[in-house]
Length: 275
Image (cartoon, rainbow, N blue to C red; front, side):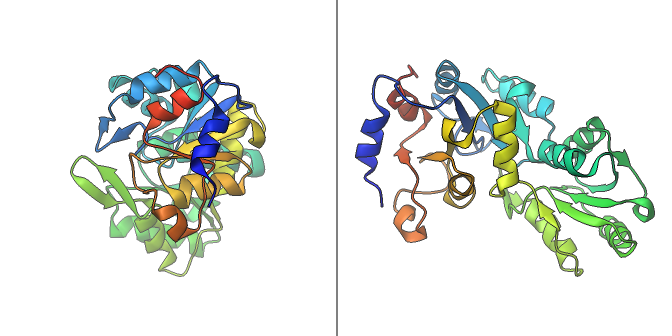
């Protein structure tokens, strides 16, 4: 395991780093249980003075604009142009590789909005070229039957992410992975999964930021998605200890981030910002 103290010192108190962009997770880094983490809004504002900030979230229920609005309501200075959601990644990935396609959607308003905004055509199950699935808190047997009908008719299957659970103020609830698992249980595993830890998520976040992997730092709270996925995409990583993963998990999981910080504010100060 790397010496975290030395790595932190290498980041310096002068802000002399090669990072031109910072890719930041939401749950566990900026918010927890639906509430902003102490000092996170000020830390994020300070981070924007050090480079381009991209908010990267697996939440597919909201569009970029909806996510930005929700964060602004919690005190974060975030615009839609700073946000990359798994719903946006799905829509953009399909458009760039397949053009405008006919889609059958199992998901919520944000996913539908991003797919429509990218020019994809919402179609009946029997006419769909792709089934696109994300978290759906109104999932029904009928929706699953329609997805099966589309897949049996030749549609391909794209999943926004495989997150098994979703944090809420009331505790954990089933995430997009529960929906994907239900479809997979019918014999149709997803052809593509675009959310973290997929490299697709980081590639698109980097494209939006306009930087190369070596010029960006991924900041997240989960070793298995934020850190491992970013490492595989060639980014340096910072594990923030206000969310899921703990420092003792690093050796146990064998996933070694570039650095570890108690919270976002501590990391920003190491980078030379004033959180």
